[in-house]
Length: 241
Image 1 (cartoon, rainbow, N blue to C red):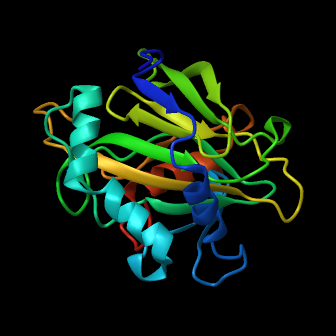
Image 2: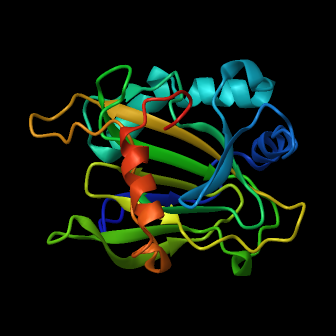
């Protein structure tokens, strides 16, 4: 486990190779209508979190990642005594980015809008074979500016390597994202599987039920983007995370 800028762990070869390849192959085509599309100045990606859409290998894998046995391993490795699965996959499941895809640096929601539990851990597994680092798409970890309550600077990039898992604590002002548009060739996609774990809320927990985004440097004085960030936090519509 590494502790800067916040607790995180990188695990290569997370799944057996054949399993990882099957999971990658089960992703729907990018133009499949089942994808939910995010296309705004803060995020350009697609996602699916419906269990009905998952083929057998993905379904079984997500079931395993939400099982008591796997959560017991997480508790043992992290020292977090009480962890709960989010079987509804709120904001999780399949994620996919095409050329130009991005995700501004952000803090995840703090309190789950359905269960009232506190989000504690993110587990993300990269699932694109043959991805090249020069295309971007690595997960950036940023430090926290205590004076402004905003991200301070990029401290680390975890490259998008096939079958690499990233586990990190979301309760430590854990700013993260991929703010630079991906430069992969047309027809190649950044694919990832995401599962989140909850814990009992602390007394002083931030009650935020939506992700809080930060503008990129070129968006700092763009009032439309700043308004969108505020609206995004307050949004109560469907299928947003």
